[in-house]
Length: 533
Image (cartoon, rainbow, N blue to C red; front, side, top):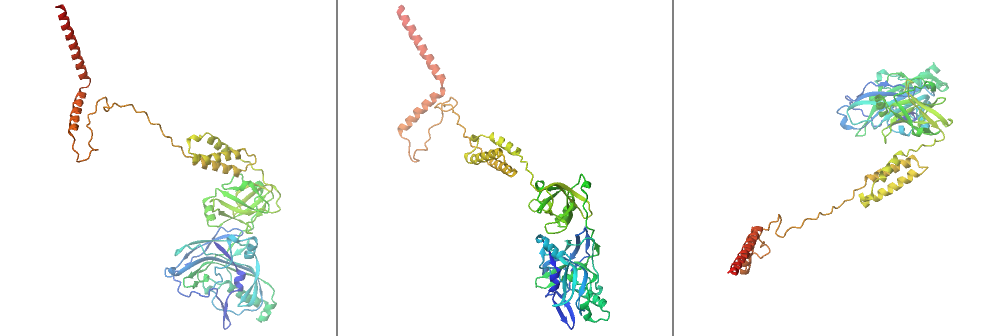
């Protein structure tokens, strides 16, 4: 997460060591003085310049011999723009101007910015420029650093994009009063000391230092703008920001934007805005969702570098961010993945119907939406899904499901019917009832049905297929050493005879019947013959 350092405090506590009248400023007590090798920052590039914002990108590289020793890397942009200096005395100083006051500590994180802290960090202010504890002059202007200690991914090289906010509109930022022979970086402290000397000379051409105390504020143009990195090694030493920093080319911010008139708002835009319930309260922060963002805009929002200007109509007024910024920042909502911006609705805005619009840094309207400010409109509650769910659930039969699963379902159904019948039920109540009923219905378990056993047809004792069984009884239940008794053998023989007889079936019975009939007939004939005699 980015943090913004307060330059006024940094300058006041700058550690200065005097060597025979020569002072050097060093913000790192354990300053790394080894060979940097290929450790460097490439030439920074500036893009998306608006009235109050710009994006700075640069490549970086860490030498392979240093990389294993690195504990942390902080990427930073250092900004200074001083418009006047009031000298107190003519400073006598010297030494190397390559040290930086950017220590990547303290300040305020971007997520904790408020209206008051925004002005304190980025607004115009006056601060003392000291050598040790001795005030040399007072400088008026802007001075801050934006740094990020979480961006490094432990890679030896890469590209960094640093959004810079807090710039003033229609203003030039860049570098002046540098020392080309000192390398790429000239510390802001050094620049202010040098300019203080120049002002003193203008105030008193004779060079008497006491005349500086009588000098009034003098208009100046002292600018400093660098991008670089500060590397902390595992042994506690640090490669100072000034050792890697590269100057950022001059650029001028755009003029304060103006709102597109209400009648000129386009009837159709690619992006769409959506305010929750279409309602906002005066003096409160409204969250406005941005749908259908183009891929390029999404990439900038993901990098926390998409800044737009927002307005509210009927008479257009500029909206500020909740951190006091004169712009809004489009970001991605972590919980939903949706893109949005937060804006403060003016406290004195009349209640009623309004519009909210957003414009990019070029003044192009990206989207707009109606919004009701003030009394919350009566909400229209949609119960259609609940009614359909209740109707469908009412067609289920309790007998088809287990008792354990039917009980919670029956309760959810009863609750859903109650919400459906409730006149003042909110949409949240309705949606919750729909979900509860759906969950309970999904938990229903079918009851197990036990089918009745079919009645088997009776079987003849002699086995199946109307044939007598041919199987002999098993001896498995008899002791292994037992021998069959004589009676048993007779019984078996008899059984065998019966079995052999049974094998003839009905044919045997038929023959016996015929024989019996013949015997009867023969007997009858004999009797009749005797009678005739």
